[in-house]
Image 1 (cartoon, rainbow, N blue to C red):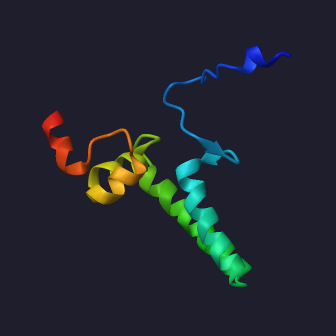
Image 2 (cartoon, rainbow, N blue to C red):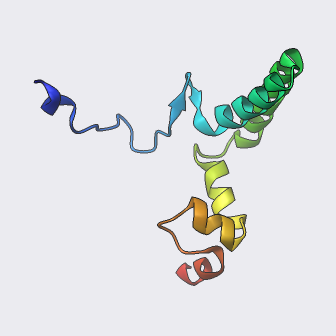
Length: 100
């Protein structure tokens, strides 16, 4: 009956992103997808190698940028159809430029 204590979840930092296995979610999810596809095809070692390369590559791209750099880049430069399906509560890319 102590559910009220955990009802509200307040993050420690407002800019802290999603963490999976101790790594940012936007680095881990692509690596897990590539590993899963190659593991299902029977190439486990190749999947581990490509997943490591993808993780290091994404970490290098994000170096010096913010935590949400990849997500914001996808938002600003994605086509309108993809942006509407992924970012549901934001305007499509063609309507974003009036905000400046």
